[in-house]
Image (cartoon, rainbow, N blue to C red; front, side, top):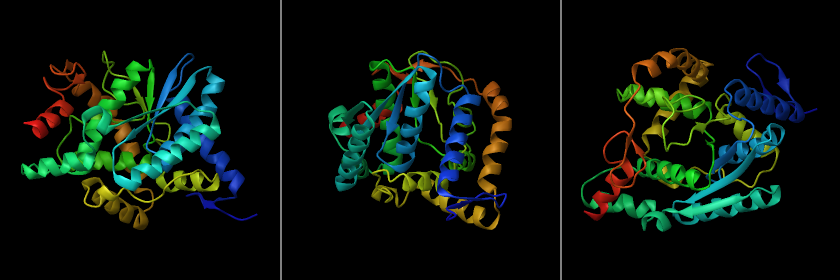
Length: 299
């Protein structure tokens, strides 16, 4: 039978063997990190892309055995046709797989799409990139709705490539205090009002995730977000791809080394848990990043 993937050890995998290999890896990640517990209600943040769709698919299988439940959540960030196609795809996927889907949009929550927000800030000479704006506001919406929908966990489709990028980005920016918030189960400690995040694809590479999605013919748009062209994360990702190409195992090395020092980082940077004075959501400061950002648009 045709080989679809070759492991670092040199072992060649057929389609069936690869699908089993990938699912076993995700199951092991959820089990060893105690991501799913009996009675959990897991809300999966779905962009309509390959990673979050794969995470949703596998979690929907795993939770049945754990006597938990899973639902999907989609945020329309209003990036023209790109967002419309992703929305259409995730609706089809959830309908075909019998998964309940919740939806909202930046326009509904904030009155503006991400491109309008970016352009409004630039008019005031505030040069925040689309990815920064999108990340801040998505995290706000997800935590808010996870509480409203009574979810006990919030799952994302972050893979090993994403995590390696996040580690290096924060090191380059001298943001050591942010590093303890990373990991398979995010957060430094339990925080009132903050729904724990889990990353079931944590040890899966982007290549593996894309192949899994392709082999199962998921309705997914594989094009990169058009607003990501000048993103800092993209530049770091290209650099790490090049390193990994010439020095195999670079990304794995970054993530595994990070996990060894993560307990020490969490112990050192415990952080003060605050509540935003404007919206009441958890925040590292008196005013959360979302409210701060919105004030810059309105102000």
